Image: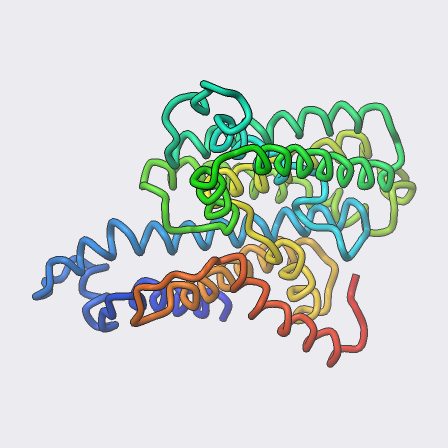
Length: 331
């Protein structure tokens, strides 16, 4: 059923937009049929399908990384960005885009385009991930690691604020637009890189399902089951870094999905078993992002709303409604 809903959401996403394409013509284009409007073929294959696939990968990857963080810290408010990895990606993008505003004569490492911003974001998230890994090797308390991750996020956010204060208006505007998040700017080559990162994160998560289930009752219980807690912690942090950092690099910082989708999945399936939750959050995250992107592109209009705003405006009431009706949070 979830797969069917995902398919319907995918079809609706590539059919609706500033140019309305009938569902019948969309089917013909997907399966190699002939249509009268040849421009529709180009719109779907070169823009809408990459955008829809990016939405599925971004939503599923962020939802999975949020599930990993909530399990590791046993905290319902934990999300994919609590370790400061997303803030590191934002700092990398800010240095590239707004660096010229701080250093006179410095041209932000040369050419600023989508690929260079993705590379800078990846480097920023990777450096923060290295620091978090170094800290994780020194401390044993998981909650202390959570607090330290939040502090890293605050530091990088402060550095971005300093860059924003000194930069010129045009570059600040460019960075603000990047921070809105977007799934519509990727080429097929960039989409291939993103899908490789998300697939690697999924495979690592599947291999760690036993450890994730053991973590639900605490590290001591996990140790009693023979789980290597230190190795498992590294694995979860690295996987979250891959997913959150890679997705932020290519699609910008997308809020809410990683925090909310794991709760949605627990409420609907009424379970904490990661054998069910891992595939559930992947599909639910993809569905949510497709629906939000369809709304954001404002069918029939040339206006495109920020995806970050849509995910929160339309997603938060659903989570509130589920929690109020269930009256109990499954965790």
